[in-house]
Image (cartoon, rainbow, N blue to C red; front, side):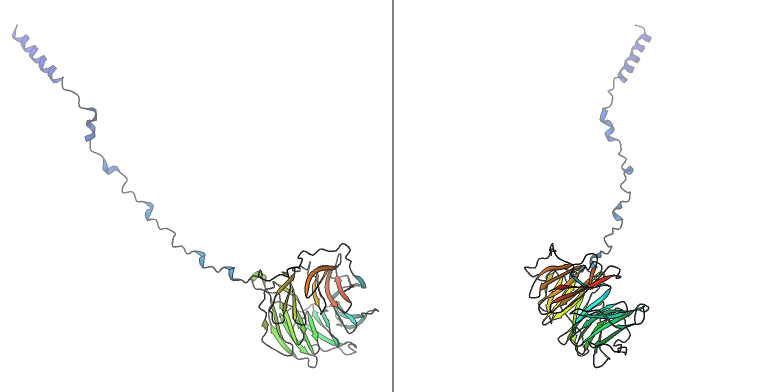
Length: 384
């Protein structure tokens, strides 16, 4: 073999030996450096955003839970609250038609009533009506009226003034030719109550109760309260009720003073809704409100709910009581019950009119009724 051939084979062997090294394993890249700097560890988190936990809560708002409720007033156990109207109940006997009375009273054998700018009356035994007094002005109307065994008294309202009115009185023999003295001293007037020398009336403008003695026309009481809605003098005391302000959560009240002179009013510790009328006979005080007809004693103790509240159906409500009967008007219905065991029943219902006033004598209940516009009505009588 020549020297060139030997050299060729030697070089070929070397080349083949270099090409026979194995390839690196497939997982050899695990040793490649990890790019740890590319992670988002330094991105700010939302954990440092201030929370709203420091916002003051409304837990300190006073709740109305402390307002005394009337729910605990005991009910007369046998009082039927849903009063059924008897099928044959009538409207009462009309004794004077085509009148529009504002209020009515009985005393001295007469039925007295206010109408327009006049005070009128007729005998309970029957007879034609007579006019006793007129204001002499169409803008000054007569309003409330009451009577006892010796005299009658009434109030007047001035349509052109919110603070001008009158309270006057005359004996049953009549007012005579002289205009009776104005016992009022500068406020409007509405309801009135008389007993002997004591005459008290409410004021619609100043929401007060005023009082005077028959012997002296000077006021003997000036008792400021809110929303005075009725007054009653009986047995040497004067009682009155205030409707209160339900929207402002201010309850109505029942108050009392000696009729003979000024005092710090005693407020009864009772809850009776918004009182609209009060009547007093003997040891009992009766209050008619939107939540019920209530009875209590003269000190405010022994409160008892006798019947459902009155809606008035446009403001037609009234209340009257004596030793033998309790009577109240709710819209066009006349209801009654025995004061000692009240089981309400309807004894008259006037269709198309409401009852604006109730007055009692020994044998009859007299009703003054009127239409909703107070333009037309009648005086009716229902046997007791």
